[in-house]
Length: 198
Image (cartoon, rainbow, N blue to C red; front, side, top):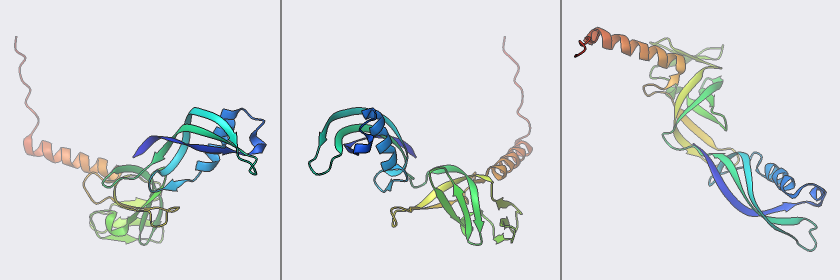
């Protein structure tokens, strides 16, 4: 899930930014500090939002920089178990597929790509043995988060599955929905039209 979080702390503004407007200098420093920032508590920081409050600046002897107590917002992505995500297949390997969901790539093990025996071709395509459905780079997909690991804080791992109904490449989902609608109509027939009452 994406969140907007309010954060407060002291921002160190180096002397080379003293000539700039204080808010601009703080925003520039915040963007540098939070670029590619990842933590288990905050998640993956996507961007710095607004600066709400800037306190009085203080200079610490021997440092030369100014410190400002600052309240600001950040936009973060924190994956959650069983969250449904949308993304695009960015890579296919013999052990699975990688799905780019914006802030991070998730990995879909070959056994979780579809409810079928899957083969890998030299042209980087995963194919279901019975269904003949394929997954290739560029496919838009819907998946579910089934594993989150911050073992390496700077490189979190996200495990995904597409085996449940209505998950997988969007073209497969549309095809399955069309088939389900056809079966429903065949089974129940066309709905009867009621006469309007006067």
